[in-house]
Image 1 (tube, rainbow, N blue to C red):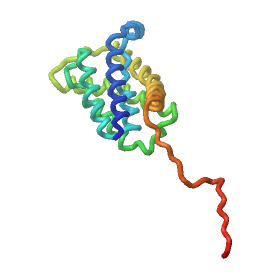
Image 2 (cartoon, rainbow, N blue to C red):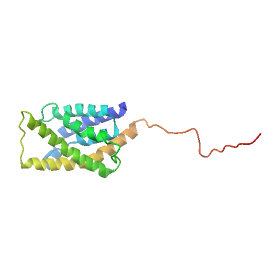
Image 3 (cartoon, one colour):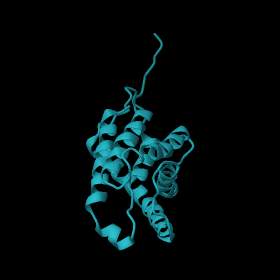
Image 4 (cartoon, rainbow, N blue to C red):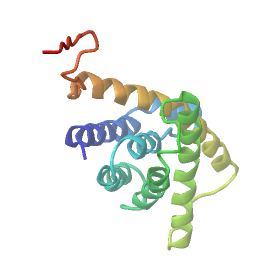
Length: 183
């Protein structure tokens, strides 16, 4: 586990949740809140280890729930349910293609509110559901799908700019010539 990358992911999650709560313009313009945590969970599942996924699910879920109307801790399990299957199959996913990032972001951004509503309905909560909820789901899905490649680009840029890059140099040079003579 790369401690720097995990710290960067958690810092980005904190800032993303804060920006979602502080910026009202997208919510008033679109009628729904665009969630950046599913896209960040996709990045974490494809590029970091299992401890980073668990830390993002716990801390990101708690931060999101503390600044929203959700009961505290309800977003942890949906975030973990998004990251775990992608982590298990990350060797098969084309993580560098923006189209794959878009599709994964759309799936994760649709799954997050659906799983949260399912957990609320299975508990004692009664969320307000109606035709407006369908519009909010569409906006959240498309907004998260568009935001996921941007999250990938931003996180890769920060990791490259601030992180330690391992150099893979060999002591063998290809332009070196070895002369062998018989004695």
